[in-house]
Image 1 (cartoon, helix red, strand yellow):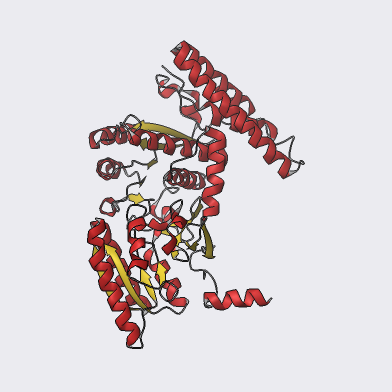
Image 2 (cartoon, rainbow, N blue to C red; image 1 turned 90 degrees about the vertical axis):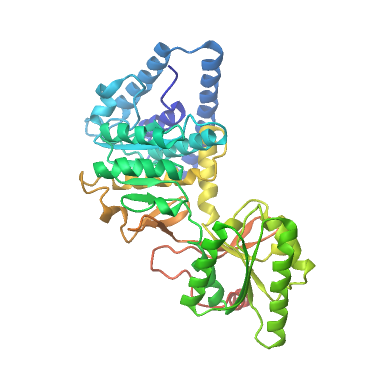
Amino acid sequence: MGLTINITAIANWARRLMGLKDEGQRSVARMQRSVARLQRSVARGHRSIRRAHRSEGLGGVAALLLAGLFAGLLGACAGDGSGAGTTAAIAPPPGAGSQSPLAKSASVKVALLLPLSAKGRTAKVAKGLKQAAELALFEFDRPNVLLFTKDTKGTPEGARAAAEAAVQSGAELIIGPLFASSVRATGAVARGAGVPVIAFSTDRSVAGNGVYLLSFLAGDEVPRIVDFAIRQGRRRFAALIPQTPYGDVVERAFRNALGRKGGELVALARYPLDANGMMPPTKSVKEAIKSAEQSGRPVEALFLPGGPETLPTLSTLLPYYEIDTSKVQLLGNSGWDYANIGQEEPLLGGWFPAPDPKGWRAFTRRYTQTFGAPPPRIASLAYDAVSLALTLSRQPRGMRYSVANLTRASGFAGVDGLFRLRPDGTTERGLAVLEVQKYGARVLDPAPSAFGAPTRPAQPYFSSLIGSALN
């Protein structure tokens, strides 16, 4: 039996509980510097304990003693100042059973279903999701919530068993799993028990009927970039879209967005993923752009959805076929949000929709300080799902995770910005518009601060730059 309590996160939380009252008058900047130093020290200690566990064979008795030590520390320190103690929101070690004091005193139980014992990269991603969930738990400090983890083993059968165990343990909300087949199996169990599910799959076919997908779904971000481009005066569009199921979804979203906003589609071509196959579609779009320019109704924007698997090759064809990106504005989708995109020189100056990067950078910094390594990109979803659960946990049982609360119009603020769950099980997000630069990307149009709020005045981007330069 190994350590089952995340010592790093517990130590961080214990430090906060013990020090907040005495340090209330101190400088916020000084406190943050101290926290950062302590987080690094604790992270080193956590790694040392793991090494000791491997090299010295830390047994079950020692693990339980350490678990008891931290549980006792938290029980002694966690309180509201009135003398009445509260219980730390951590899961008991395996074998402790339902009689654990922690489990008995937590009034809200939330299950986290992940493929922890799956092979290869999946297990690493699952670990990152679990640690992000723990980080949210301790940063939000809701001692009335017990978050416990169940292993889905990366299979539908494992997910079904994990969901059944979660329901039997009294979970009011299930977070996860990761894969579509596991989400489908989990949803079938959860629906029978009236327990909602917030999952991480990108397959929208499993959404709905009590299952909400917090993930970024293909095509959902396309209206944001079309709307921004039209507000900047671009109304005639061309598109080069991959010939894949993903491309099918993106094309429908693009056509629908143009129809709603009054844009004109001048040319659209689909390309296969091999380099040679990309050439004829790109050439046909170039010819359409040239013809439109000669007719006096030029193409003003070229939509190039894709990611690091296609853009490095596709972007080299733009100058090859003499597509002038100083006249035709390049537009991307969320797939453009990857490191080093600025190395693709033809894409410089392109616009794409994505979360404001400030939130991810801040989350990455805190996660790395706590756990000693950067998070996988998907980790923000687990943090935001647990944050949502904690935000609603203070409402009465039977109401806190109701459809009305989960899909509330105001939504929730997360690492990746504003989001809200839709009744159909998908997620609406408040995205920014970024511009590709040689080193990273900069925000052109900020994400909305509230749903329904305008992102910025409907003023052409270049006019606003000139105005800023003159002031």
